[in-house]
Structure formats: C-alpha cells, structure tokens
Image 1 (cartoon, protein in one colour):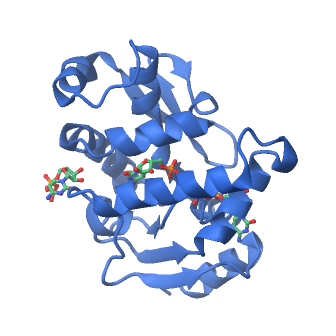
Image 2 (cartoon, protein in one colour; image 1 turned 90 degrees about the vertical axis):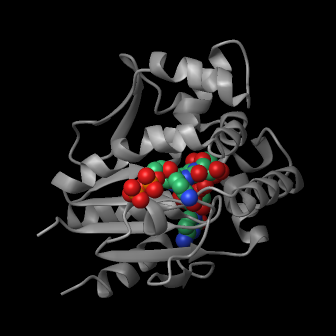
Length: 223
Ligand code: CDP
Ligand code: CDP
Ligand code: CDP
C-alpha cells in the first residue's frame, strides 16, 4: 500500500506551508513545500543573467541547474532545496523570487522537469506536500486533499506581518496587489492551474490558528 500522503493546495499566503509544517511535526511526516521548487528554478535564472520567460533559453539551461531536494536531517523532517551543493532554502524566500517563480511555473518544460522530483518522495515516505497542483496533478491519489483558502485581505495582512509589519519592504496595499496578481497568473495559466481537486475538502482558515487547523486536518485523516 502507498504510504500516507496529504495534499494541501491554495492561493498565495493562505497558510499552506505553516499548516503543512505543523502537521508534519505533529504526526511525523516529511514536508515538501513545492513552491520552493519553482522558487529555486526562478533563483537559478535570476542569478544566471537575469529573469527570463523565454522558453528556449530556459530549456537550454535546465540541464545545468542541478536542482535537488534533501531532508534537512533534523527531527522536523523539512525538505531543503539545493542548487548544486548550495542550500538555497532561505535565499528563495523573497517576493521578487516569488513573482518569478509564478512566471517560470507557466512553462511546461519546467513542470515536467519537477514532476518526478516531487513524486519520488511520496512513493517511499509518508509526506505532506503543499502547492497549487498537488491534489490535481502531482498526487492525484493522495490519502487526503485539502483546499485551503482565506480572503485576499487576510492573506495580505498575514504576509505583511510575516515580512516584518511596519518594517516590511512593501506596504500592505502593495503586498495585496502582488498576491492578487500572482493568484490571477496561477489561476489563468493553461498548465496545472490552481484548481480545487474534485475530491478535496475545503478549509477556510481565516478564523483559525495554525494549531486549530492542524487539529481539523487530523480529524479528517483516513482511519
Ligand atoms: O504557504 P503559504 O504561502 O500559503 O502561507 P504561509 O507562509 O504558511 O502563511 C503566511 C503567514 O500567515 C505566516 O506568517 C503564518 O504564520 C500566517 N498564518 C496565520 O496567521 N494563521 C493561520 N491560520 C495560517 C497562517
Ligand atoms: O508562498 P506563496 O504561496 O506565496 O508561493 P509559493 O507556494 O512559494 O509558490 C510560488 C509560485 O510557484 C506560485 O505563485 C506558483 O505560481 C508556483 N507554484 C506552482 O505553480 N505549483 C506549485 N505546486 C507550487 C507553486
Ligand atoms: O503522466 P502524468 O499524467 O502523471 O503526467 P503528465 O501528463 O505526463 O504531465 C507531466 C507534467 O506536465 C506534469 O508536471 C504536469 O504538471 C504537466 N502537465 C500539465 O500540468 N497539464 C497538462 N495538460 C499536461 C502536462
């Protein structure tokens, strides 16, 4: 029987990775934040002569990227991202990288390249993955699928606080505009758009703490 796998999908900054991370700690699963893969690809291109959405250039350079994922070795079972030997897990967090990630994510060759990287883990280990297409494309047979949501204003406020509140590099309004723009791009793309899997369970976490949402998911795990 396939190991337990949990898919969490939803728009930007709705709390996917916080929920997945806390759940992974609570019940002992690996956690792969799949946005990190698209962010790593974006970082690679940003550092290699600037951003590009030219599919030919991307195809030419993909073989040189040497992207891999490895558990960080701690008991928290987080999975880290590497370009060659360099751990880029922290460097990929900026909003600039996030924006480019959303652009490289529209390129079919990039998604095809990242598909086996994501599936490989789920074949061998208990895992929770969060992203946009986990329940629909990456793990269509996941043991449990959650479609997470919260209103844009709530998500923008959370991201603003996460980036330092008054010390954030952008205003609350700018952050909300960026999130909404990224959501539009993620919903509109023809390949693996952000969509709710037909067998996913909806969770609006706008009035929940992270711990409460973990409890909610645990109650719904297959017995
Ligand atoms: O992974 P995603 O972009 O969907 O969101 P996240 O990075 O997990 O969460 C964005 C921010 O919202 C983080 O600072 C979380 O701590 C916060 N959050 C919250 O305040 N309440 C929740 N129920 C979930 C997330
Ligand atoms: O943390 P946040 O929700 O802001 O973004 P993320 O999950 O790190 O994802 C960055 C970008 O990667 C998204 O805007 C998507 O375009 C893309 N992505 C994707 O296409 N498919 C996934 N499974 C995960 C992320
Ligand atoms: O063989 P399987 O159905 O599992 O995957 P595939 O159809 O060969 O797709 C390979 C990659 O292309 C995946 O990463 C998908 O995200 C992407 N793809 C897609 O998203 N939508 C399509 N209509 C075709 C491919």
